[in-house]
Amino acid sequence: MLHAQCPTCKEGKIFTSPKAYRLKQITDMPAECPVCGEDFLREPGFYFGAAYVSYALTVALWVAVLVALTCFDWWGLLSFSFFKNVDLFLTTGISVLIVLLPLIARLSRSIWLHLMTRSKPK
Image (cartoon, rainbow, N blue to C red; front, side, top):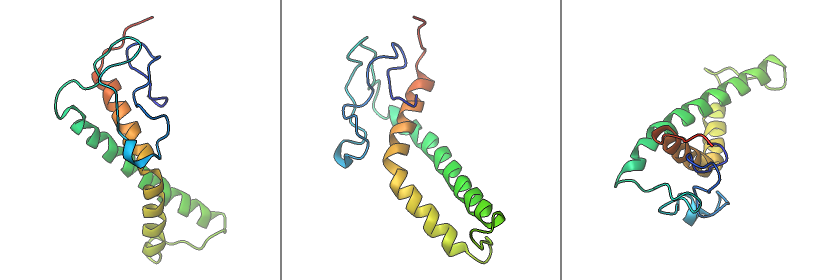
């Protein structure tokens, strides 16, 4: 899933562009796997389910930001209290989310495709 390879043959690439930060090509996918022919574009709206995966990844990211800021407070590197520094939490979380958004979009599509495809043993 993390390497964005075909869930069936585990060799073909899911996305046409290997770089996630080409903003016009973030979610461009071939119609089928170039190696085994697995259908990537199954039906209209198939990848709407990836929004649920993206939501879960985003929530995990916000929890990770909160834990990281709290750990910096425990180590004495930053005086962070959630109720006193909501603006620090929000600016840090939004900044990290904007930077990681292309990766989250690709990863959520890859996870959704892997969840909905029955893999075949080699």
